[in-house]
Image 1 (spheres, helix red, strand yellow):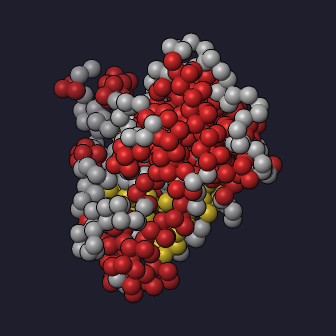
Image 2: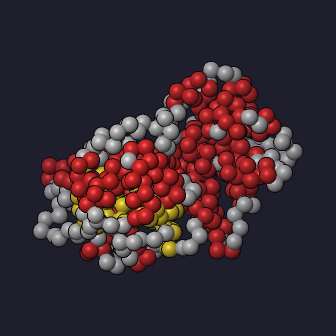
Image 3: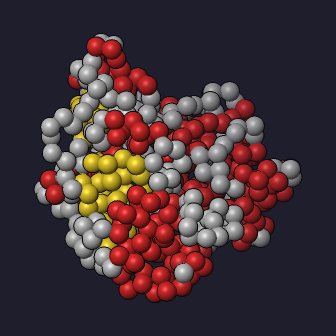
Length: 463
Ligand code: CS2
């Protein structure tokens, strides 16, 4: 069916729920996860989302033309199923800060959710925040400015719910917002401390980036045109920890869980899923793979992943984590060849991601008196990718460019310094990472065949 013959997906006369959630970071993941959970909450009819884009307005324009509706294509290893999601009732260009301030100032708004990427929580001098609150250009700046509007309107407390892959993401969001508030308007910082609850969450659903063939598939399978469908795996998980002073949807009806201590769940997801993703991304790209499933099928990448998992699992205790079952599920999820999850997408923003996904395991291993070679392999593969001609998007591009001017182990040290100066200052740690880098280089030269050495190397490495 061609676009000309299929009607555009519209809400028609269907009722939209009132806006009670404001979301920053309207992208594919927020639609396969937060909006999906909200649509499946038992009280979905009373919880609408106004979603703001990040850098570009495009997704808002396309979604608004469809009344906020879009299709989730749930893709298992054998079949696709299609569902129209209606929880987004307003899609807005992120640059429209006055609409954001207006919505946050409304007492009816109870929750603000965030998927703004890990790098967007930085507040240092390079983070791009403006010096004045009137023209915020970053998501954190926009959020802080909108919280000032809520205070001014006297609309009372609300919950800010971070859904980015950071440990303690609620606390990190709180620190970032308070930092900006202190700089811009100190009494606002006091108001935020009193009135805003920062909820930490661990989110999970593999959601590859949009491809034009997704629209074609919806046309032929569903008989309508959807310019912005989302492909996602069937698996989904959401663990939340914190208070909702102005209420929240009954997300538990859709499978969300509320816990008192989130750290073990966060670490399990960040290290085992995201850490393995980064490992597969960098080793896989170096070995000519393009998707997660391709890299999983590559013996070198696969062995490196298993070695990292064995190491990381030593630091994940507690029966409630069910590590063997979790790993078995991950092998199956990563192996879904019907999902084209591109390594290049995962490889972006690497200096921030590997700091969160690999460094904690590396440091815990070294604290335990071991080398931490499995985690070092992630850093090594990232360094090898950055050191090669691969063009990777990163929040620290200039620092990385300076670091690659060095050569050999000095280059590895300089790259590690971009992740954390304390890493570069530890010569034995640098040596372990560089040793893994040499092994990866040797494996990658072995064009597409078996690696010349096992990814983690012999049992007695440098420490
Ligand atoms: C991925 C994540 O792009 C990445 O860095 O590791 O987006 C991952 O797919 C999700 O966290 C899965 O829940």
